[in-house]
Picture 1 (cartoon, protein in one colour):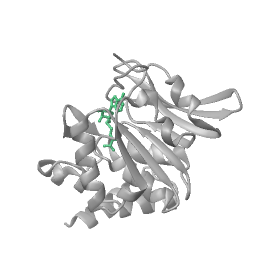
Picture 2 (cartoon, rainbow, N blue to C red):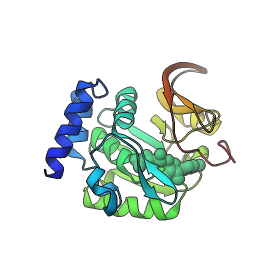
Picture 3 (cartoon, protein in one colour):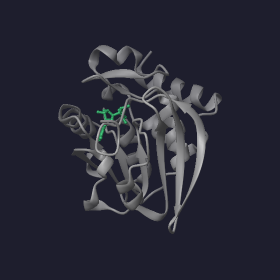
Picture 4 (tube, rainbow, N blue to C red):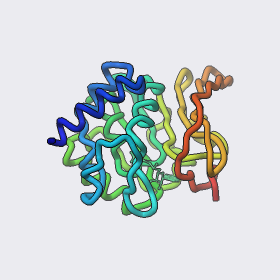
Length: 216
Ligand code: SAM
């Protein structure tokens, strides 16, 4: 079976299980190839619904978790998005696809080698012009392009890093796995003036956010 067929089947399964709900997320996950973002030796499993190692002790999240996060973020054309935990670049590529040519995704990755590889793969998918891949501590955000319409964190954090809330637009949404090193809850925070309204979406397990406002 070709990668395209495997990918179409993955999207269908995610729709059946309710993780993919909107046509926008279905289109993005059908268009963006996951296999090019995983190391060659793992490509046979690229469309299985599970996390995979991407080197440096890090992982690309399982497709159902990626889909669930994209649905909660409610991405649309023209938005400016910040991702913390760029990893392979796959989640950033999907977000870039959804925000279109007028949108922008800034993705921060702590490990330089992963960011470098993600940049190369993004070129292959022709989405690199919509993604700025930055190396650094994402718990500090990236002031240069702030404020952001959406911020999502793809690693586990003990708190919402204050700089990220500061860099979120009024009316913006931030999605983060909050909790301990071993178990977190996916939390969506809505910013309205100086108020933050939070909604929880169940348990999840991510690798840790390592940085000033994460785990040390
Ligand atoms: N979104 C990624 C993808 O599509 O492949 C998967 C992210 S992986 C689950 C989490 C990533 O967060 C790892 O690559 C890790 O190096 C990164 N990370 C951890 N702490 C970070 C920090 N303070 N700033 C930026 N990235 C960080």
